[in-house]
Image (cartoon, rainbow, N blue to C red; front, side):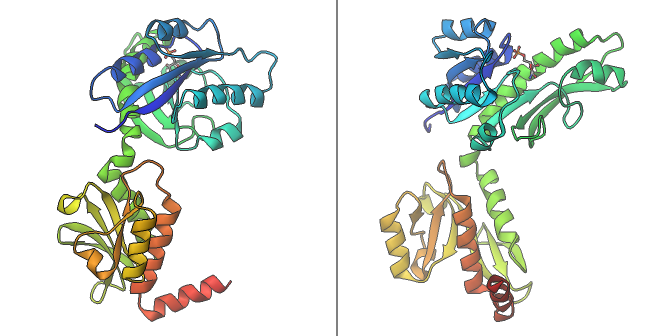
Length: 321
Ligand code: GRF
């Protein structure tokens, strides 16, 4: 089992979602561990629980501090704890844009509605008043727009005839306690999930002109130039021929370049079986911190090498502007 991802959980109140995250993390196959529980409210009940669980805690009231200064202090505690992800669980603070930007793609929140419905507060009362058949909960990525980031997972919860906002809130929390640990586990595992990695490679490869996807020897391959005369410019290889790597294969300028890449950055590049002999390099994708812009640049370069002249000429003209 790979090393566990470290998460910091930020709370303001009861912290029942934090507790659900902690207990799920205690199962042997959990891909994450809770490195820190932090709060803007020193009296948050969840802090005492975290302490009793032997988890590091940090509390700092925001009163009298600017938003930026408070965010920065929370962030410093998160970094000090070695956390790679921030998981908001009833953290009742609007975060400054700069803080959110720094953690983009590494900060999650849980919101008690079926987003995009009912952003903000009083979600249960609003769902009941609207006569909705269901309330629910959503886990989403945090972006500068309040409750507006990509939704990662949801559970719908039926609204019963005598429902009150309090009774609905209570049942939604039960759903949240199931949903959040699973969504966090899936999210922190994404970097080694073949389906998620293939989806990213596919999106980059098929964004290039006149490309299509076709299987080649059991792997997804990406071609340029049309149905009949298309040439492969990339392959997706999921632990092929005993390799531990999930990789994107692209064509280099030749064996010299391939070998110098592999020698210079063995954590990023490897020489794949069979394809390596003709100058294809493997870019290792199942590692944290993949530079996806660089993967995109490699795909474009490999595409150029395989694309018919009429297409590369167009690209050259576009580049000249
Ligand atoms: C949850 O309902 C969550 O959706 C919302 O705040 C509540 C936090 O509850 N963001 P708890 O502190 O985890 O019990």
